[in-house]
Length: 167
Ligand SMILES: [Fe+2]
Ligand SMILES: [Fe+2]
Image 1 (tube, helix red, strand yellow):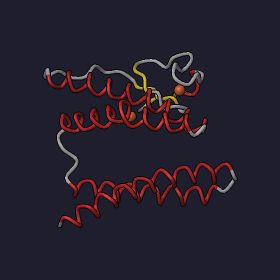
Image 2: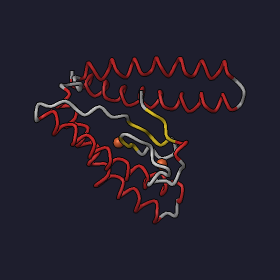
Image 3: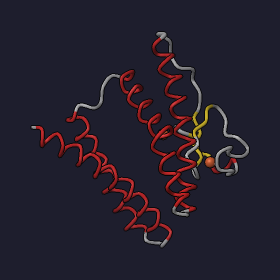
Image 4: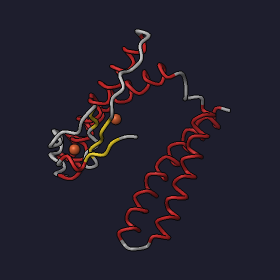
């Protein structure tokens, strides 16, 4: 059973990555005017998500929303306080400017996520409902904002038009 739990975790990681990889490949196929290949990548991506979610459910990692918020806060906090700062240092030392940019924007956005999740958890802990607001995400850097997209992304400088609304 212990080995199976390990296997489930490995399979969850692999299927999750396959999902994002296939979506990236689908975008590329669209750019290459290969819509049917794009569709095939999207279909397989959806199926990999189903596999990933099955594995995660069986692992037992989907708990109550307040426990899930705790898990999310710890993950984001680890990323912005420890993981990305270390990755950034290495990217700088190795002179990899693209990785440096990617780590830097992710680092800043994870801190924002930790804050949004903490605010949500505090509200739930008070027995209240979250205020109804729209969320906008920057398609360049992932910056996640409430209510209204800014004229210019404060993290990556992208214009307002690059933000999409979460429905
Ligand atoms: Fe995040
Ligand atoms: Fe951005």
